[in-house]
Length: 248
Image 1 (cartoon, rainbow, N blue to C red):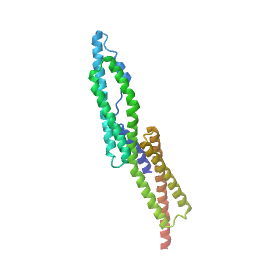
Image 2: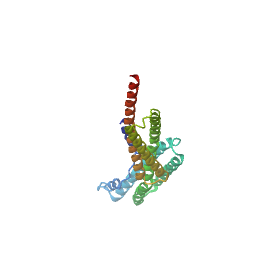
Image 3: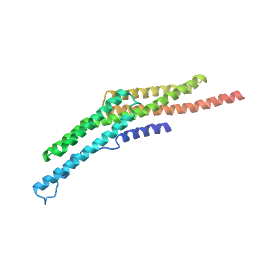
């Protein structure tokens, strides 16, 4: 049962770690800047609002660069462990986002008041349409890559139990046969969803669909471990009875 909790804990850690630092560019933040002190004359008001807008845009861009850089660092750590083609594609797209944010940052000093308004709106649209999907895909890649050790461990466990069942000739036991077949079937389902998630990452499919495949694969993997645990307990009980009968 502990394995099941571990799988879902890993899911939570993977997703939250990739989004540990998120930067938002809300229109409400800019609307608040328009309510400057009415005691100021029009020129002072405009100047103050422009300065505040530039500071807010610059700070948001600096935060976005830090956010994307941290995510790219996490992805690059997995470069040698995961599929190189997927890693390279996601890392390159994150690098493109970082360079885009850096370029936009150089434009801020030259913005006028009206230009800053359009600039912030365009930046928000670009982020939602370009950066957010790749950030979610990067997060999925991190979680998927870390999960591969769990799949290898499960396969090894299945192979070990299969050997024990064959050597002890326990496959003729109906209860063990049912559990073994069920564990094998559910593990195949886990592998199928794991491969679906991999293809989703390769093709840059909808991050939500890829994440669904990852979750389904972990749910099946968790169920596989639960059945294997019950199977081992039953095998141990049977072998103990066989040993006791030989000693009599």
